[in-house]
Length: 265
Ligand code: NAP
Ligand code: GCO
Image: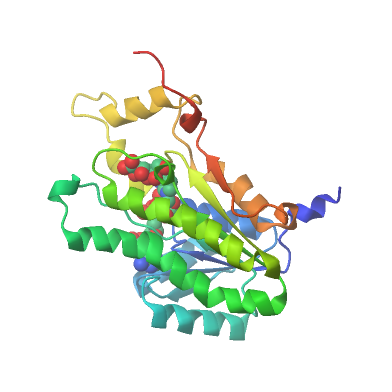
C-alpha cells in the first residue's frame, strides 16, 4: 500500500468554527498532512486571534467572518475561497453549540438556535461546497457528530436531536452524492476536554472532581476524557484517499464509552 494515501498535499480544507477546540486540532493535523487550511468564525476579533494562533503553529491559514447559519454569508465565503484557492476538497462541519437546559424549561427559541447551528448549518455549508466537488470529481465531507447522535441525557434535548439529525444528514449526503466520488462521513467524539465541556469538569469548592467528571471517567473504558488531539488521526483518515471506499459511516472516537455499561460503583 502507498502510505501517501494518508497525505492531504494540495488539498483545500475548510473547517468551520476552527478557532480553538476540536476544529483547531483538526486543522493542525490537516496542515501537517499538507492541506491548505481555511476556517470561518463569528467575529473579526475571533478571526484575528485565530490567525495569530495559526501563525504561532506555523500554519498559513485563511480565515473568514461568516456565520454558518446564514446562507448568504456562507455562499459568499465559498465563492471567495474557490476564486482565491480553487475548489474546496475537504469540508469539516465542526462549528457547534450546546445549551444544557431541562427540556420543559427550554424555550423554543433556544431549541431552534441549537438545531440551527448543529444541523441546519452543516446542510447550508455542505450544499454550498458540493457543486464544486462534483465538478472536480471528488470531495470529502466530515460532520462532527456526537455520542448524542446515539444516546440522550438530561438537559441536552436540542443538542441530541440536532446531532441525531446530523448522523442522518451524513448518511443522506453519502446516498445522494456518492456516485460523484464524494465521501461523507461523521466523527462521533466522546467526552473531549474543550471549552464546550469545561462546565462539566470544573473542580468543586472542596477541590473534589465535578460529579459529571467522575461519572464520565467511570463510564469510559479509557478512564479519561478525550483530547482534541485524539481526533486528529481519525479526521486525517476520513479526509484522505485512504478512506475513498468509506461512506456514510459515523466513526466514534470515544475511548469505548458507547460499548461499556460503566464501572460498578
Ligand atoms: P467549542 O470549543 O465550543 O468550539 C465551537 C466553535 O464553533 C467555536 O469557535 C464557535 O465560535 C464556533 N461556532 C459556533 N457557532 C458558530 C456559527 N454559527 N458559525 C461559525 N462558527 C460557530 O466546541 P468543541 O468542543 O471544539 O466542539 C466542536 C464540535 O465538536 C461541535 O460541533 C461539538 O458539538 C462537537 N463535539 C464536541 C464534543 C466535546 O466533548 N467537546 C464531543 C462531541 C462532539 P465562538 O468561539 O464565536 O463561540
Ligand atoms: C454534554 C456534553 C456532550 C459532549 C459530546 C459527547 O453536555 O453531554 O457536552 O454532549 O459535548 O457531544 O459526545
